[in-house]
Amino acid sequence: MKQWLHWLAMHGVVRRFAAMGVRRGDVQARMMADPAVRADPVPFYDELREQVTGAGPLIRCRVSYVTIDHGLAQELLRSDDFRVIKLGSNLPGPLRRLEERTRPQALHPLRPPSLLAVEPPEHTRYRKTVSSVFTARAVAALRERVQDTAEALLDEMAGAGDGSRVVDVVDRYCSQLPVTVISEVLGVPESQRARVLEFGEAAAPSLDIGLSWSQYRTVDRGLESFNEWLTTHLAELRRNPGDDLMSQLIRTAEGSPGTAPLLDDRELRATAGLVLAAGFETTVNLLGNGIRMLMDAPDQLALLREDPQLWPNAVEEILRLDSPVQLSARVALRDVDIAGTRLQRDEMVAIYLAAANRDPAVFPDPHRFDVTRENAGRHLAFSGGRHFCLGAALARAEGEVGLRAFFDRFPQAQPAGTGQRRDTRVLRGWSSLPVRLGPEVSAARPV
Image (cartoon, rainbow, N blue to C red; front, side, top):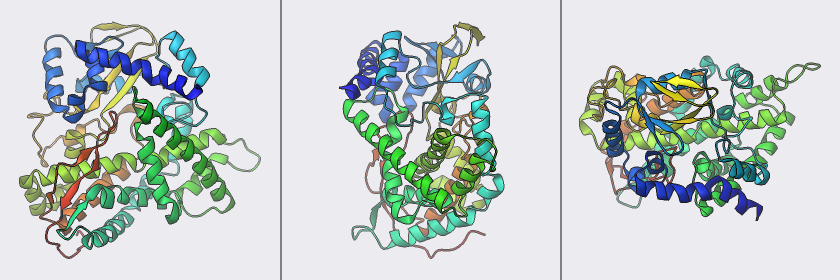
């Protein structure tokens, strides 16, 4: 009963009102619950753009504001007048109290002490601790390991398929590459990597509001299992530390003997868990989205073959056009004027990152896929400000190496079906993507 009451407070009521809002045309409700928007959000971006033309960059919804404006999105992501949202904090009073009384004990990515749900000074302390381990030099050193892993996975995939060389590229490649890399980085034994992938897939909808009862139970079980596994994993690394970055993070967080720890046990588990899950979940989407986009755009793939130096920019363009993270949100810390509108304390603005990434004021001909686009890197797919993604450099490296290696090996790969999108709103990617590999080219290292 407690679990059901929590679902009711956190998701059930919201889900019911969202369905009603869709029928009334409420923008935020449609972002949450309109199946047409989830299937293909691009026409919705254009519809919203028409709404804001001449009316200012903020769209008023029933319970919050929404912006699709690139400039305003940047301002909100960096503003000290706004904070990140904490799951449940913006529910109406009675529902908020019910949610607090029935809340599960397992750590959640949108509740403190997660980096995604805290602000300075806690956020500064957590991020500084992680950044001292996940340095630019440490990430750069992983590039060769990403290449080795990609080639090994492609070797395996070349011998797979159903006789016509059709494989589910998400299952065989897009998910395996980042989870293998991040597991090695964080000291996860090979025997447990399949479990980590399962945890990530089960918990991915935890960033969404308005889950069905079935989705909620799956997420709840996934988070609880992940928390239990993570506690055991960290305890094992304390007993038998290695050269991996997670062992280094534990040593850094616990500090020197006789000094206060930089992170307490709960803070360490929340930070380590987020680094592990975020280290592969969005990259799975980047790789799947990129493979599908490039198969559908042979002219762009031809440009990359002619000039491989364009691959880093191609990754930026893929991130811009099909953002693995679609949405973020900020809550006003105080009464504040923003874009000519007076917001009251605790009012929320949903930042539609994916739509802002197609703002024609910043990106001319914004729906065109152009791997030579000069300002592709101005996208907001990694958020911005103090909450800019810690793993952006690793994600970019995995995207560049992983996509290039795939198309170098299988230059004639083609879709072998429509595929299936993930049933999530904040995260966007493919849950399955059948691909006919075509002739294989011998593996060769990029020069």
